[in-house]
Image 1 (tube, rainbow, N blue to C red):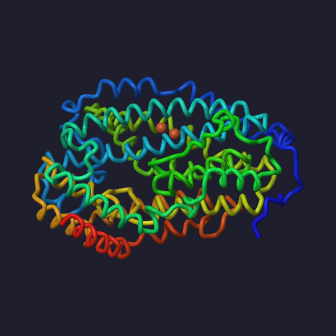
Image 2 (cartoon, protein in one colour):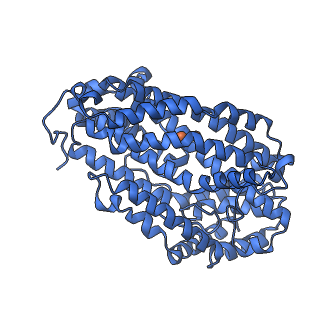
Image 3 (tube, helix red, strand yellow):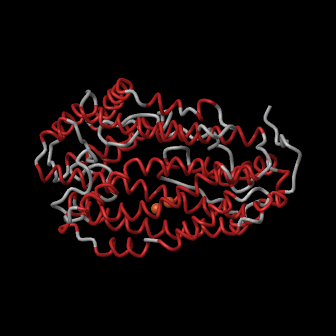
Length: 463
Ligand SMILES: [Fe+2]
Ligand SMILES: [Fe+2]
């Protein structure tokens, strides 16, 4: 039975201030904060974003060729050099659009959880680091948006914004197609299903949260206190593939109500850190290679390089909070354990429970990307008619090809990084510590079967 009773005797959290607890992680946090403030590449990133001119970067690959949209598919093999360059650029833009949305989630939850650590007391440096990270993310997001906007405008035209399919479809046709396909996606277990909490009202969320954390009301996040009756929530990025905005309101309250859960949030953030690093490290490496040989370095490659340098500190913080700092607090209640496990389970399933055939280092089914692929193929870049676009989508998404195998290679790397991290969190269920849903997602056969079913649905809705 789930209860709010603490498994250890109730303790005054302030007694658990880090100075009473061994200095190792305290020193690491202080060192990380100082190093991050000293190095900080946000000004440089802002300047790179402001000065970005697509035409000056358009004739160069921004990353390894395999980091290209539709890489390894029959369409990629048939594409011209300029189309291959564009696919390499659009991949960068797509990945950093997702990163920007995830970093926007981070900005919110850094503040929610920092507000809890502030109440606990003794974590001033940790809170300063989290505030500093939040300000860095704002600059990062601006830079990604600037480059993304200019690149998409140059390659796909202004119609690529706010138009989920292509201008060749008239408005009623677009509307009907979208609503039918959305219905299909909502019926998918991963994309549309919340935590089955959507129906609950905010007042119920508050009541449950208060009841479950009644022993630690003094820890309620200062940030949330200042928000009054408003419960902030997250959309897009990592949150968008995990649960509904309504369910995220419930998580906001919980991450903002208990020191253990505030620290647990950083294990969810670590998934974002690891996911980003899986591809960003490739851009970092490319930058180093180009620098060594004195070759032209495209601006987006440079942005990835400096962003990784900023993010390295964020990753250290995610790791130290979720693996060390949480031990400063009373042991989790059965409720806190349950919620932590549900969160990681949902993240596994939503963010990494599949394998894309068209987007390398993306471990989700292609179903939700099908409208984007259709728009890409009917855009001026490929200029296909409706029949040709569907023909190539079927060829690229529903049959085995090199792209799937390249993605499987990245999947293995990410899976072992995740396992190394989660194996240390003893409050997690085996399915989470061993990342079993991610492991199951690394199946080519399953990915193709799911794409076949989703494509049949998509081609009917677009007909
Ligand atoms: Fe960032
Ligand atoms: Fe970050």
